[in-house]
Image 1: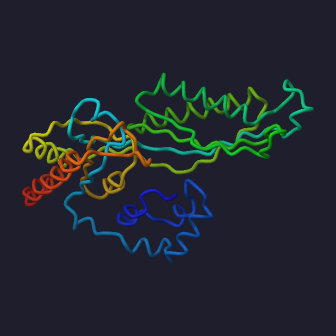
Image 2 (image 1 turned 90 degrees about the horizontal axis):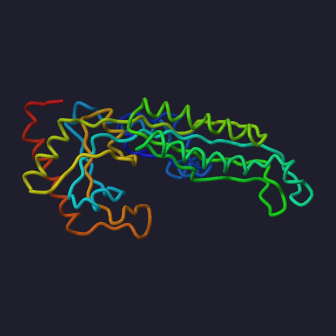
Image 3 (image 1 turned 60 degrees about the vertical axis):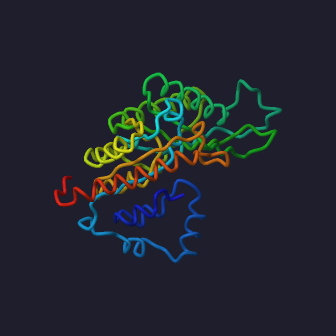
Length: 286
C-alpha cells in the first residue's frame, strides 16, 4: 500500500525510495505500478505549481462516532495526526511443541503477544488521546506442532503532536526490547512509513466555520485520527478538513454509512466554504 499516492504526486513528494518502501507487500505494489506504467518520474510530472492554488478543502466522513454521539452536524479538523509504522521481528527458536518443555522454549509468538498487550496498556495510560495498533502478525514456521521461531509484528501509532510521537516511539520500542529480553528473544526493528503530524490552516478553518454558522449547522473543532490527502496538501497550500457524522464510527467496512441529510450538509458546507474563500481571493490571507 502506498498511501495518498495522488496527493503526494500533486505536491511533488514522490521519490523512488518512497515507491520502493510500501507499508504492505512490496512485490504487489511494484507489479501494480508496472501495470499502470507509473514510476517516480511520471508521478513527479503531476506536480502542481503552488502559486496556482488558493486553498484545499476536503470533505470526509468522520470515521469515528464523536459527531454522532454529540449530535453535532459538522466537524472541523484542527490537525491531522502523525503516523509512524514499524515492523518488529521477534526471533526465537523453532522446536517440536510436543518434546520441547514449555519452560525451555524461546517462543517468538509469546514474546510478541506480551509486547502487544503491554504496549497497548502503555499508550492508553500515558499517551491519550494517542493510539496504537498491531494489525498483522506473521508467525513462522506456522504449524500446530512447532514452537514459533519468528513472529513479525506490524506496529503503527498515531498522535497529533510530533513531540508526543517521538516520546511514544521511544517508550513503545523500549517495551518491545523488554518483552524480547524477558522471553529470550532477539528483536529486529525495521522502520516503515512515517507521516508528520499536521496542523491545518486557521484561515481556511475560519471559512469552514463561517459557512457552518451561515447554514445554521452545529459545528465543533476536533483532531483527525485518520490520515487524509489534506495532510499532504497542507505542505503546499492552506488546507482544511471537514467531517460529517459516521454511523457508529464504522469505516473501511461494508456497514459504513452516513445518512443522506448529513451528506447534503457536508456538500453545502463545502460549497459555501469555497464561496467564502473565493470572496477573500484578493486579500490572499495565508
